[in-house]
Length: 435
Image (cartoon, rainbow, N blue to C red; front, side):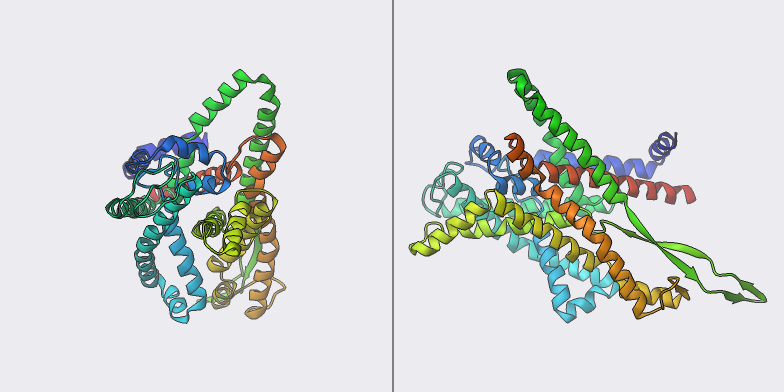
């Protein structure tokens, strides 16, 4: 009943209804652009490679499905995410940027502007690297004047310039769409774009599963196992995402006029997974970098350089080594991103200014240390869970021989984005009900 009444209130509120229509239209525009291919490319051959290559599967996820059609938005929001990672790292290293990040809304706007500017050269560089990577993967030798492999036609310098300008403009347009979606306060724009790309491939995946079962009924056991895993993953994602540790906060007694008010008590909620799906998206961006760079040296004249590059490419095609690297990156980025968004020192100072304290813990430095230790303990469970979800497709693929590329990651993003959007919608409903 509460859900039905909330849904009815949502559609009765004109501004919220208009925001929803606008967001849906922007996602439709995104899906339309994802089907506009770069001229001179054979998308069929590319799609067959996506089904058998772990790195390309991750890249296709990060692009919201734009890579499989070699579309004008084939880079997706990857360059923007890379630029964000760079500036967040610089914020922790460069004192001037650290001070700017603490300068409230003004500082955040300046850093956001610099991030957008950095996205442009990164998009051009990543576009060039992606084309080289795909052409060499297809068995061709891409160059500015020669053949460009099975995915590309003859590329002249003018064609290269036009293609790189197109895919760079596609990334900038996608970044702008993500930002204006976020302004509607119905969810994070970049997450919704990736979410839409994943959901768009669901009907085709179900149809393929139906055809596979029709031709091979013996695969029913594998699909039932997959369905069980999906249910368990969804339950786990909801449990971890909603899980929190409530820290009791007591307030000192205060004298107001002639009255002495007793100290109230409430709670400071600390979530098990504060970072959401950001660590996995960051890890995907990082794990794509080594094979991209290695592709440039596979045909090097030096034997040891060529062998080292081939070894790097082989490692990131899948297997145990790749799974360990991916798992470690996800866990590390979970702690890293939480350290960026959670500031125990600032919370301890705010509590002390408000004459509040944690029972049994001294205000100030001891409160800061206590909050950090609690976060580290509960965050370990969240980080390990995210890492397990990230490598889940590798485990299922080895157990069932299915090509389940990025299945667990896709499921995590979908469920997390739905939960985040529902919470933002509820917040908007509460705001409008107060109005």
